[in-house]
Image 1 (spheres, rainbow over the protein chains, first blue to last red):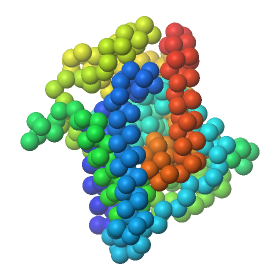
Image 2 (image 1 turned 90 degrees about the vertical axis):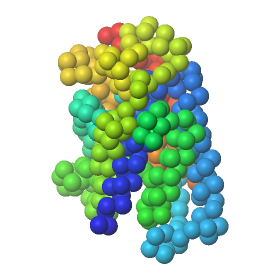
Image 3 (image 1 turned 45 degrees about the horizontal axis):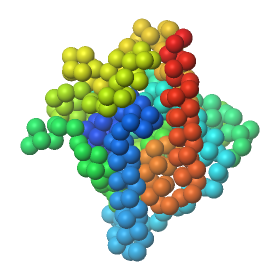
Length: 137
Length: 193
């Protein structure tokens, strides 16, 4: 039962990813070619509304479901990793047309070929884990 | 009602709905970030003994694995119950550009729904060089890059930026360096192989 709410939230996420068309390879191409405002609109609205949400929660506007105070840990200041890892991810994103959330959603559409992309992503994460101590962060 | 939801959503509605998902996860005591699921899946698959990165309590990520299972189910519901009447409508300029590199944009649902490029991504092209690079190398870079960067579009571009995290801004700049380089320089070469 503890996990049911996450299953339902995930179902909502899959619907949002589909109806927003953020899972479309064609939409991602359009974004990286600056030929439509669509993706920028989605991310822009999410960031602005998300910033207001963070601000409101930090001012004490809301507690978590279990009554605890909500805290937001800072992202680690590993700028080299952010830039280099981010660039590698960008290369992959523009090829496959999907970031991790959309990859899962596309499997739900019945595009079994995407399982190959997910398996490759797991291999990528596994390789990162092996090389982690040798990479700059 | 179903017909109304079945239309493609306006970007502003989509952006707000993503924040609603983020809000629910925060309220339930978690943080929005999908790519950590790759780490958890590797740990479950036995990578625990091979690298210290995977030697962690993945059960702390059981909520995230449940969430991505939901995303799969949600995708199935969205396409079977709330399917759009027409394929994804992209700009005419993009359709022209993609035609030049050999990708056909579907115009009717019979040709494809516009989610994945069927002439590039299928089990036959997986054996070709261009198909192998886009799907296998592409996926590898997603898994390697997101974990090195410490997040993907959800964890950095949405959660991180909206919490004013500088490392996330740097990561998003990286996403675009890689994405622009691939789209404008490398992809035309790869698709020509």
